[in-house]
Image (tube, rainbow, N blue to C red):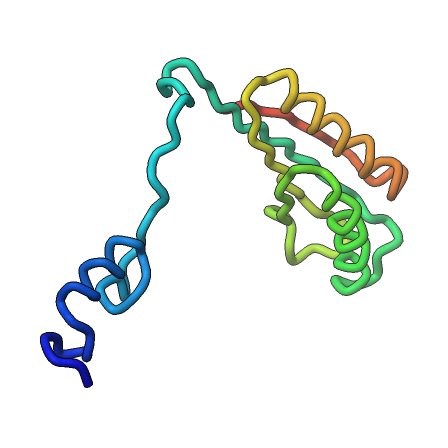
Amino acid sequence: MREGSACGWSERECASEGERGWGPASRGKVTSAPARRGWGSAANKTMVVGLLTVEIHVSGSQSLKDKRMVLRRIKDRLKKFNVAVSEVEHQDLWQRAGLAVVTVSTDEPHADRELAAVAEEIERVEPGLITRTEVEFLT
């Protein structure tokens, strides 16, 4: 064990390692990267969160397992898009499902195109399942 510190590191080693975000001085601490330069102020950049709510009717489903298989197939196909997908409604019903699809973009038209492409992909993968869609934007 080294002298000068309870952990065996010298005070100089602890200080220099802690500044870099690793070593004994940084245990349990969350460090962040230095701020990037040239990004401009937050007032110049906007962030748009697009939410697509899709209601689905799975008529051929005889159990929750059947419904989950269909939803898993849809979710797997949506991985190629820059979106997050979750089942948010009707988890206990066999033939109904509510999916929420979320994307984040710098402008609303791009987010709208992305969510429209997602709805088209769902219709292409499982034709006739979509009963209702709704798009919302948070800015």
